[in-house]
Length: 141
Image (tube, rainbow, N blue to C red; front, side, top):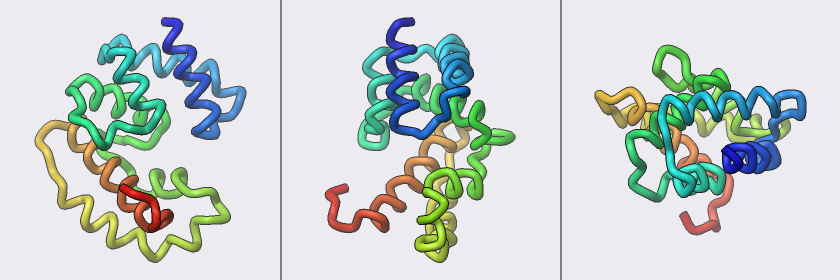
């Protein structure tokens, strides 16, 4: 439980969650942890944003989907593209990359899975990885 609060604090620092939402975010994390138990190491992977480079457990994928549902990014078991992209960018940066989004959506939406958690997980990471390559072209991916 202590780790959940530590993770929440770190997420709040790096994900721009407003202070009044801290308690709610902790509640979301606890709820998702009860439904889809993940290890401390798996939580650490989420906090350090290293989940795209590892073979994630089914629980980790469902935990991530659960958190995205609580944040309103997943509706009816599907990642909502507009919500993802408008939340991914700082508002002042969105216009710079807006024309690059449709090809990313088209490519990433070709990645399918019968498993709902897996589908959200792979599309989310596809979007994130493709955007990072565009935004930070010199960074090793």
